[in-house]
Structure formats: structure tokens, C-alpha cells
Image (cartoon, rainbow, N blue to C red; front, side, top):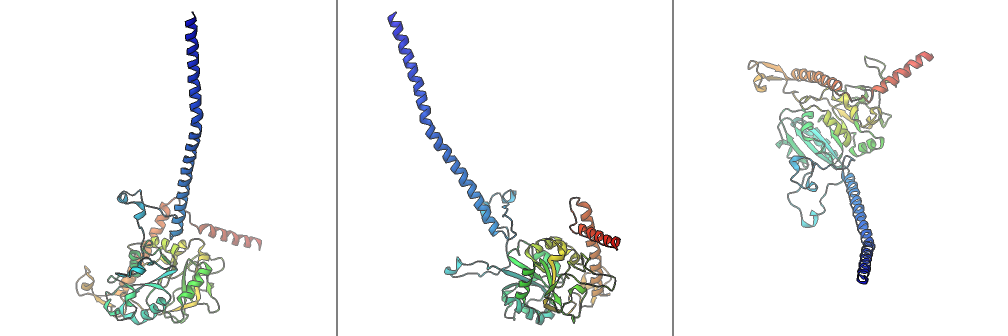
Length: 407
């Protein structure tokens, strides 16, 4: 009996020791668990901080003001680490070699601007004067040779500093669509897409850029000297007493312009011979240009939609820095007026002479109508698109009707 009681006592004692051991083990685990949670929280904190830091770096170096988007989801790029992907470029000339001391310092300077001009050898003298002015102001120069002649420019001192692109009988808009992609020109603050027949005696590129920056003009052009050979729209004529203007007033003719006018050609308008675009405005404009409608007719009337806001405020004409428009016909111009059809690879009977300028104007008119059709069709198909200027028109008409009722 005594032995049985002793056995029970021993078993209870052993059981108590076992429970105490577990409790002791749990107590010993608490510091370890606390340390583990602290480490995990630290890792989460560091990961979050790193991600935020990377986003800030991407914002800083993004030319469009948006975080850089790595195309890591693209199947064609999945073999590359995303940090090595370089999705944009520029038009800066690079040396074939450089001294070891300067290699690490090589970089694209800030505040760069681009001048792009379609040129023919007959306008060499005028283009020479224009380019020299822009080069002094640290502009990058790209010449689009539409007549196929490049060698005739090589004797100019600055020729090696310019980029030369050749394509026979192509227009400014054809070149721009193919060689001025937004990812290629993203380092430039402003893109000057000018014709070759502009006199720049009264024009300073640096003062012009200063004005459009101060006034927030996303799309602009220098005013035209009133004595210019060719002027199409009154809004482009220089106002002698102003630094710049955003609208014009016209009480005569078929187009009436007043304070109530809210669109082209009274306000929010520049012409195609000398437009200047901010980086953001060019990004939009490049997508507006139609790949196959090479003459660009009709595009100028829609540029206000790329003004990054109110076109009556963000589009303007600079009067203090103005140019002289010589109105020289280039493609199909002087010396090319009568051309054999065989030279144009036409299907008509060989040897029949045609008026090239007439044919070009006919083509331009057809493209203009086609552009309008595409614009209207795009509006009808995009049910989510809202015309940002329609509400302005309704508000103006309502205000005008209210005035009539009050009177």
C-alpha cells in the first residue's frame, strides 16, 4: 500500500516538473519572438523606404514629369534586367573616343533646345544665317534635306555640328513624324520646327525662349513682319507695341474675331511655317500628325488641343522677336513647275507635262478633307472623349444671350 502511494506521489511530482518545463520554455521564447518581429518590421520599413526612394529618383530623371515605367511586363524584354533598359534617346552627336579623364564627366547639358528645318540647296544662304544664330544659343540642329543634296553644305563651318537626314521630295511633317519621335527629343525643352524661308534679322532665340517660359506658352511662333511676302492669318502679324499676343480682333471679312472668340484663327492658333513646341506639347502634337498625310494641312487648326490646358492662354505669338516670311515655294517650286510625268513615275502617258505646284495643292486639299474626316470619325468612335472647348463655347453663348435679354 505504501509503495503504491509512493508511486503516485512520484508520478504527480514528475508531471508537475513537466508542466513547469513547458512554461519555462514559453517564457524563454518571448524575447526571441519579440526580436523576430522587430527584425521583420525593420525589413518591411527598409523595403518601403527603398521603393519610395526609387520612385523619387524616377520622378527626378523622368523628362515627362512622371515616374519612369519599366517595360518589365513585355515578353520581348523579359530577358533583360529592368535597370539596363534605356527606352529613350536624343540627337546629340557623340565623339568616337574621348580622353579617360573626361569620360566620366560626359553628359547631356541641361536647358537644351532643338531646331529642325527642311532645307534645299537653293536656300543655303538663308539657312546659313539662321543656323548660326541658333548655334550660338546652344541649340541642336537637324536639317532635313528634301532635295537629296548634302555635299553642297559641307563647306559651311558648322555643317559637322548639324545632323543631316536625306529623303528625296519629302515634307517637313513627313520628316518630323519619322525622326522627331517624343522618345528621341525628350531632352529638349523646346522644339522649333521651322521652314527654311524665314529671315531672322530681328530674332533672338534666347530672348524668345525666355519670353515663352515666362508667359507659359506651350505652343507659340514668332510674329511675322507686316512686310512679309506671304501672310495667311492676321493673328500671325506682328503687333509693334506688344511683347506677345494671344488673340486678334477682326471686324471685316468672313472671319470675325472678338473677345468672345475662343478658337482658331482668332485665338489659340499658330501657323505651320514656324511653330515652337514645349516638350509636353510636342508629345501630343507628334501623335496628332498623321503618318500618311504628309502636307499637314488642318493640323494647325487642332494644335490647341495639345496646349496642355486652355488654348487661349497657352498658345501665343511673340511680337518682340519676329521673323520675315519670304514665302518661297520649295517642293515643286521654282525650276520644277513643269515636270515630265515619266520623272514622277506616273501611270499617265509618258512625256505629258504637268504643273507640279497644282498637283501638290490638289493633294494638300485632299489631305485636308481626309484629316477632317478622321477627326470627326475619331470623335464619334471615342465615347469617353469630351471636347475641352465645347463647354467654353456654350458658356460664351449663354453669356451673350443673357446680355441681349438684359438689354
